[in-house]
Amino acid sequence: MELCPSIKNILLLDSEGKRIAVKYYSDDWPTNSAKEAFEKAVFTKTQKTNARTEAEITMLENYIVVYKFVQDLHFFVTGGENENEIILATVLQGFFDAVGLLLRGTVDKKEALENLDLILLCLDEIVDGGIILETDANVIAGKVASHSLDAGAPLSEQTITQALATAREHLTRSLLK
Image 1: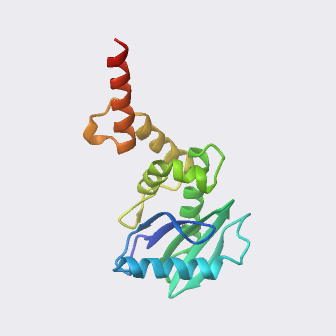
Image 2: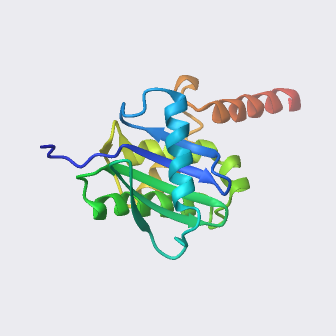
C-alpha cells in the first residue's frame, strides 16, 4: 500500500488531441508510441463530454483520469485505480488555475504555445517524480514567475528563452555604447 498519493501523468492537449505539454511520472507507458496511444485513448473517450465548468472523472485502462476543458485546451491528470479522485481533482485545479494566472486569463492554444516554458515550469512545481509538491495556484504561479524574472541568475540556471533574452539585452547595450 502506498502512503503518498501519486500522479501517473499530467497532459495538456489541444482540441484535436495533439500534445501541447505532457509529463509522465511512471513507467506504465515505456515507449513514446505507448504514451501517444494513451493520449489518443484519453482524448477520444473524453472529447464528447462537456467538462468546461467543472472537472469530470472517468476510468480508462485501470487509471482514473480527471479532466477539464477551456477554450481549445484539454487538461488531464491521471492516477492509479486506487488513487483518491479528490486529490487528483485538486492537482488538476491547481494546474488549471496556475496556467490561467500565468497566461493572464487568456487560456488558449496560441497563448499556451507562446508561454510553453512557463507551463513546463508549472508542471515541475506541481509534481516531481509522481509526488505532489504543490496544489495552490497562487504559490505555483508565484514560483514560476520568480523563475522567469530571475535574469540575474547565472546562464547555467536560466531557461533557453531567458538566456537568449539576456544575450539580446547585453548585445543591445554594447551596440548602443
